[in-house]
Length: 454
Image 1 (tube, helix red, strand yellow):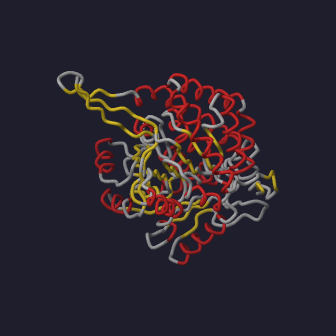
Image 2 (image 1 turned 30 degrees about the vertical axis):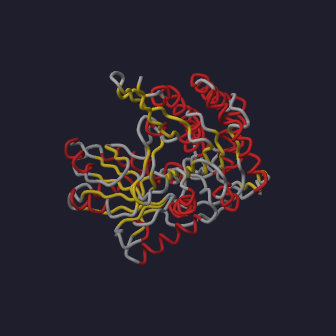
Image 3 (image 1 turned 120 degrees about the vertical axis):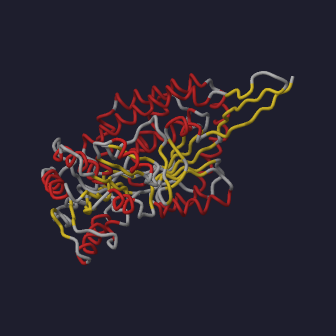
C-alpha cells in the first residue's frame, strides 16, 4: 500500500499490509506474551512506558517530520502533539498505581471484601489518523499499564507513524509479543473484527464506529468508541475582550485544520456582541498562513483525506443555497495537495448540513441568538454529544448553561481541550466508554470481587 503526502500528492513510502494469516500469528504471540507481561510488577511496566516517552522526546524531530509528511499537520503542531502525548504518558504512569491497586471495601469483621482490577487480555486498538500519538496514547498506554497485550492498527493514513510508535515501544522494553502492529485499510480492519481478542477500542467516525459495534456486539466483548462531534460554542454578551475571545475561539475551530474530534464546529453569539465578535473573528482567520506544512509560519496545511475538500465544498454550496453568506474562504484551493480555504459563514440555520453534520475541516458557521435559552436549545439540537463550550464572565450563569448541555465534556472560557486527569467520553453518536483519568485506566480492566471469610 502506498503512503501519499497530502501536501504534494507524492508517494512517500510503501507498507506491506497484513493478512488473515499474519494477524492470527500476531494474536498467537500476544496470547503467550500477555500473562507474562501481566505478571511483571506494575512499577516495571510504568518504567518501560516512561522510557517510551523519553525515546519519543529524543527523536521528536524525526517523528514529527514523518507525521507531517503523512497527514499534512503543520510541523510545529506535530511537535506539539508528541509533546502532549508525552505529558499524557507522564500523568497516566504516575496515576496508574492508585487506579489499579486493589481496593478494600470491608477490611474487618467476619467477611472481608475487596476489588481487584485484572487485565482484559488482548486489546484491539483501531486508531485514528488526526492525532495518532494522542489518541493512541489514550488506549495503548493504559492498556499496557493494566497488564494487557495490544493489537494496534493505526489508520492507513498514518501507517508510518504507527511503525515509529511500535519501534520505540519495543526499544523501551515492551516485548514484541505484548505489542503488535497491524497495517492495512478497511479490509484489514474487517479481519480484526473477526479475530479472537478480548476488547475493541476504536477512535474515528460515527459511521465506522456504529459498524464496529454492530459486528463485535455478537461476540460479547467490551467495546469503547470515541467518535465524532458537532461541538457547539456559545459567546455571551458579557465578554469584554472580544478580540482575544475571537482569536482563542478561532484557534478552537481551525487548529489542525479543524480535524480534531473536539474542534468547535458551530458558534452561537449573543446578538448584543454578534457584529463585533464576527468582525474580530474574520480578521483573525484572514491572518492565518496557509501553505507548506514544513514551513515554520504555516498554520493551515492540507487536509489529510483527499476526499475532504469536495465534501466541504458541498457543505458550502448547501449553505449558500439555503441563505448563508460566506465572509471568507469557501473554496478548494487551486494548488497541488488537499487544500481548502479557511471558511467562515454567517446567516446559517439548522436546516443546513454545515450546522448539523460533522465537517472535520477548516470551516465554521456562526449564528446570532437572543438569549441563553435559545443558545442552549440550538447547542443541544444535535445527534452528537462530545464537547460544548461557553465564553462568559459570570461563572454562576455559565454553570447553569453547562448543566443543561448534553455533552461528555463542557468548557468555560476555553475549548478544543483535553486533560489526562479528566475522563474523555461521548454521548449519543459521539460514542461511549471513557479513556483518560483513573476512569480511563480502569477501562482496560475487568473487576473481580473477593468475599473472604476466615
